[in-house]
Amino acid sequence: MTDKLTVVTLNCWNISEPFEARMKLIRTELQRLQPDLIGLQEIIVREDGFDQAKLLLDGLGYHWTYGPAMRWGSDGTPLPWDARGDAVGNVVASRWPIRWSRVQALPGVE
Image (cartoon, rainbow, N blue to C red):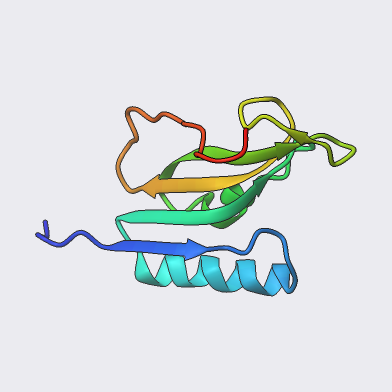
């Protein structure tokens, strides 16, 4: 057991290009660094099943929770953050189980 806690945080730049190369690099570096906690920003999760967090973290031994910051409908119409629809948001990942999490609306435009 170590007395250090290692933390990585990164803005993943949503699905902007060069998407595949960037996701591969991020995943490779997370495997190499093996941080205890990870904070990821601008993560896309869509209604069609696409989950950027899963793409980056699946199989690496992390537990994670996702919090949407913004949502939109299939026609691009903005939706409340807690509605169903495609979303961009943040992920907290941990080597240890996450026992509790809560998503709270960001201050600003309703």
